[in-house]
Length: 396
Image (cartoon, rainbow, N blue to C red):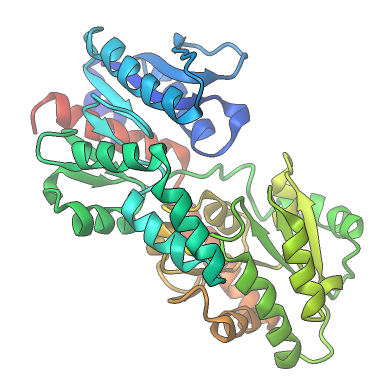
């Protein structure tokens, strides 16, 4: 979109999010960047949130607190209070990203709850744990509120515009709610093409690989994310044992970055005889250093509305292996890596990763990945969202 096309109209925009701030990462940091870009374009921006970074922002940030005892009750209370505050302030656009009500633009970063729930159950490897998960969901007030909220916002009297973060999320909205397609715009997240770049390999690769003990000829596979069960870490570790048979004598290791319970996965790796090849890096602020050290990015998720980590890896020039239940995979044009249908198909996952043990294949896919990532700069994301706003206020 050409920003100058809308240069004559300055909007009053409210953002409603449960948490807000660059230090919180993920969707919270993304929204901070979007709000900052909109303010930089000259639009009046305000934020309504339940929890915010203490660092000052270049626009008003209203923290709406609730003293209710349960987190789920506090979240529901915030959704109702924020809706009233934003609605009564005369904004042109009220853009909500999570647990929100009363918005005219709904941008569910986590995707459709019903779709997530189905895949969450599939990620349970044991029957007993799957039953426990269903019981917890049955007793979860947050879950019932989210189902009610999404039914309301996706329904015919809900949000006037829905911004899906991927084509997969759009398909999920159409499948589960039958929302009119013309209400839905697909706007993929942007990625920082300067921070995440093949150029980082020259300055960061050698030192990071030494720190993790990786030899110069050792293949380093990288996985980044939280909620390791849902992100397919179990099948990924199992695939390492298959890789040993596909590439006998070849040295490789898996680096896992993010927050999670390491114990069960470390035990799984030891039981399969690949324990020494799994390295837990924890939460890293300098995540670009891990992309620089890696050779292949592997993200066999059971559900991701649109994995930003996959875009970061591609921008870093890495071939990627992921699944069809990752919304980011729907943006791939072919050649960037491999997309498997079933996250639990361990042999297929191992074969997909093994294809990039070939240096020529790795180089070709990495170049294609970077080329595709360059189509998703943060500025394009903001421009496309502004186009949705302008179409809304002009009645198109």
